[in-house]
Amino acid sequence: MKRTFIFLPALLLGAGCISIHNVPDGVPDARKNLIGDKTRTYMDIVEASVHLEGDTIAFSVETASRMPEPREIGGGKQVDFIWFVDADRNTTTGQDKSGNDYNLHLYMNETGWHTSVYAVSELSKAVGNTPVQDSCKYRIDGTTLTLLVPQRTFPDVFFDWWAWSMTGNAPDWTPVTENPVTKRSSTKSKI
Ligand SMILES: [Ca+2]
View (cartoon, protein in one colour):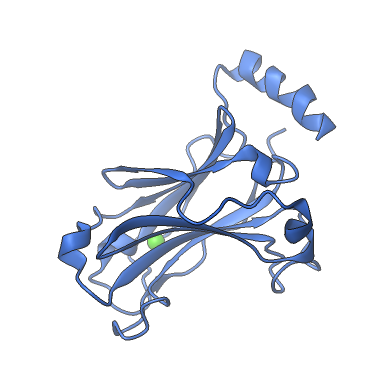
């Protein structure tokens, strides 16, 4: 945590912004790369980014088209946008071989938008600051979807991350559709 207090003020002064990730305008992702139902262009991630906003970390994706309204999507359907965080940037620790310690879900079904933060590794479970279901803020701004997770959730602001969209939590809505995971990025490489 010590590095946090050294580097963030420098960023604020030097850049005039609070971006903490390696590409200020985000990590691009291929357009029209959905697997499954390619007409669900609202799931097609074209850019992903992570920024610090006050005492929260903002996880965003931009999609190829606007998400439908919850009432339009109908019963039995659900779209999850998920950001994975490898908190110790070590692929040998985590939920699986990608090294993810946290899975951050912003998802929509017929009841509306919801948030879930999962601590999925021994490391993240030991931190113990995991937000409870639906306690995180979020923004739906046109084709930009943002999940705001308290910074205290994570042991450090420096971590690896990548994003995914999928309908795997609505398996009866066929075909199950996904935007394959975006390129792995790091909030540290710029610093
Ligand atoms: Ca895409």
